Amino acid sequence: MKSSIEDVAQAAGVSTATVSRVFSHPERVSPSTQQRVRKAAEKLDFYISRSAGLLKSGRSMRVALLVGSSKIDWFTGRIIEGINTVFRDTRYDLVIFPICNVTQRKEFFENLPLRGNVDAVIVSSFAISAEEIERLSTAHLPIIGINISDTTGFTASVSIDDREGTSIGVRYLAQLGHKNIAYCYETFDEGLNFSSAQRIDGFSEACDNAGIRSTIITIKSDEDGFNTIYSQLLSSRNKDVTALFFHQDSLAVPFIFKAQHIGLAIPEHLSVLGYDNSTFSGEVGLSTIKQKPLDTAIKAAQKALALVDGDMSAATHDIEPVQLLIRSSTSRARAL
Image (tube, rainbow, N blue to C red; front, side, top):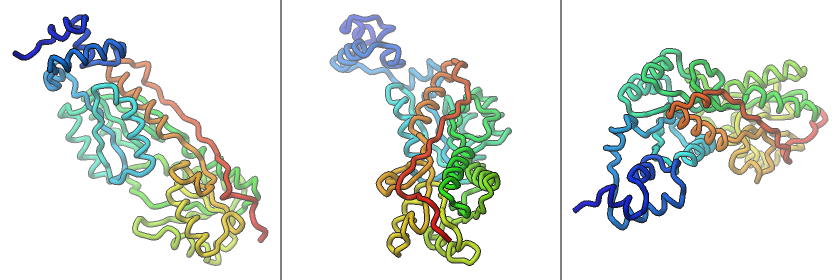
């Protein structure tokens, strides 16, 4: 005969309500009691049907994460890690939806929320339309943003100030005497309104304020970034560029390796500044603007769970600081 919840409660010396909480809301039960209940359940070969519990609670126990790429890059990887850090000890599952264009974004908002498949939606690094926000609001789903430049309609968010990050970088390079700086970034789908586009605006504005000549170098997704950038630097218009500011470290790191391969000294010939403090930036001595996506994601996940439970004190929009890390890839501007 199959063991009952009463059998487990008696074996563990607790109430049936405590047994239920161990399997449905373990965060509400002390670790020692959890261990005692789980040992008793294992010995009695007892389990609680997940589907039955979900039907009773009226929840799906899933949170959707929308990311603006089909690739798991450094940033997205840290976001997923941070959210899972919070969800690990709960019954919540994280469902990841790569959103590569406006069409895919539209399909998500038309289909998933209205079917009751998730309890909250976390949107990472791109904007959603007023209509899409209305769909989620109608379905009574909290919307939590990570690195969102426009939080209108979002229930809560945790972001950095991308514009301020590049402004800090420009002011630092200006202090080093750089008067002609190029900003390098890989093109992305403008329809998704990525928050990091604010970095480009911040760069241009900071250069104007500091009296610095600015150049924007765009790299297509199918191009070799180094070849595109170096060709631009060899042009007569850009021959006086003394510093490169990269949209993200993942572009700056390979540039440094290839530059050294052809004898271009970093930073003696050219200073290089990145953004993110991602993998290998420290190993190659890349000066960069540091953000902490892991910490940002943990806070966003905590907000999501609180809002699902009806705790509206989590409905805040928090701005996390960025930090300039000075390493060996930047120095005073060379004499022209």
